[in-house]
Image (tube, rainbow, N blue to C red):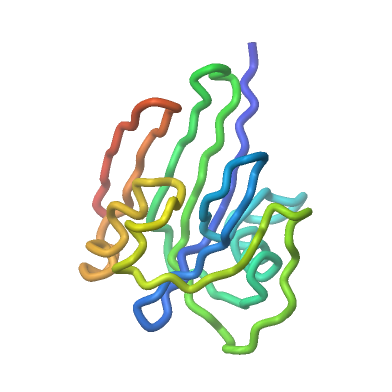
Length: 159
């Protein structure tokens, strides 16, 4: 049996000690995500992260380096999984263009103070648990975790 593996490149954009997030609604659930999405034909993962950030937030960014990898596996259907690759990115311009709402899934775009990140429901959770520390230390490691419906396994790797 073959697996369906989706890859979701995303960005972590930090400006003035705040991080860029999108408030999202999927079905009845509402939570925050870092801007990102699916790869289009011919794109690299970096190009996807840049395009998706512009589409979802209206901000143009430049990728700096990969900082987090999260593998989500649906425990009820292990043939369904998503590999999220998060790039640290910086704004390339201050002007915000009109963003899409992704068919109603994106409720709003927000800049959340890094110190307040732990107070919101943001996914994957391992980033909110580590971002403040990693930001202060200059993102010296790439963190990797596997997230199942009911448990997680964290692994960190030196760059």
